[in-house]
Image (cartoon, rainbow, N blue to C red; front, side):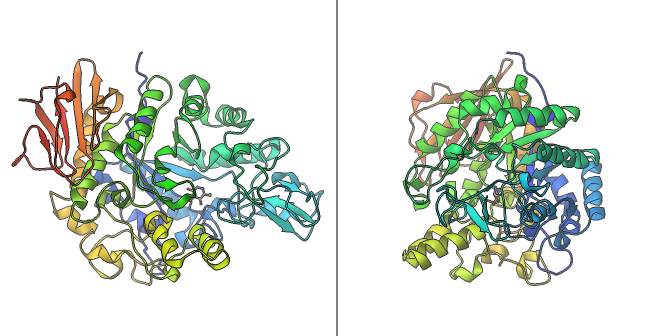
Length: 557
Ligand code: NOJ
């Protein structure tokens, strides 16, 4: 099949969670001037697109994912003029800007919602999803919120409930209403006309709800995902958005889509369908969870991870395009989750980086990943700030009587605040993130793990990321090459080839802390083959043995 080239396929995206990136004014909260002060760092790293988590006006119930004004900047982060400077600084360095688009819901403090809740005949009433209760004092259906408790909130003023799949300060927008849809398209044009280069779309596959909003089974509370994930009108809405807005600009788009399958992703990202370019799928984020869901910790195997990544590689080989990520602001740190954040932190962070940059798709780096930043083990609940963690603790421990220590352990492993501790810039107090008191404590390992040290060390995780990114920029095979799995049943090695126009590379990754022999079933004679990049020095290399977490990229043709 002919290859269609595109900047967003060749891109290396870097995600900034602004609250935790760099504070410039000592209020303990990261901000836009802080980001601007680090643009040279990003350019030096080599990334080509910046995805900025929300910077819009927000009361911060969910750190900016609850937006009260889509066309202005959050006070803590700066001003629209700061934002213009950021865009200019990025573009001057050849970096594109992808904004977060959060339009499944707004804040309850958005002007639309303030109007909507006033009366049943308000002109904004239908911008949100209002229902009466079925029986006295019960919500309209049994859906639970992603942040614990019911997904419905009763509102005194009109005696009806509104739907909120996330917190009660994040009412869901009613996409059935064409006026709402067009207001969103106008807002998207507002940013695109200012020069924005694309959007990451928050839970965008939640925007179409099933007719009648049926209850999910008979439990008192249950996740209603079957009735709003990939809902009946989702493709129609995305095609309309593409037709109205996206098709008029040369942009990068990625839709965050919990629960999306390969088959659905083909529809969302197939080039002839005119919807989106990529989705963030979640299947590999769900490994390591038992039947009780996210907080029910369970072991995982390489096969669990590989079979999912492989399925997506093969599934989107001809149609659609993959996004490649192992962590973000909602997930624990990749090196703690899939690698080894103790003895083999450097090796395993680099091995995972090799995976991300050599699978077929567009890699997404989350701030601090390039330093090998790790999870944090706060010992007191007060140190945690995330609404998901705090609501879950309230529900499970305070109201449900679950064991405090067990839940704290689950938070250590899975909590979103693992990713939200401040970026570790140097060894000065608070890791150089702020001169004030940070809104969330810095990970105490900042004296050993920080950008200043990494920049000086040719062996650092950061230096390795730079090598990988530079390699990708000059090697079309890393972007466009076909993927083929090797050693499909191996317990500790993930191996595959990439092939493009007579050139072939092999990638070998040891996922564990024991050395492992490369079996003959690999089917490739590695003798005399060039190692293009490895996370270990050449010295001590044995052709048929991978050391702990060793990664090698070979040129075999
Ligand atoms: C997904 C975002 O990434 C997450 O941070 C947020 O809490 C929810 N969507 C709700 O917006």
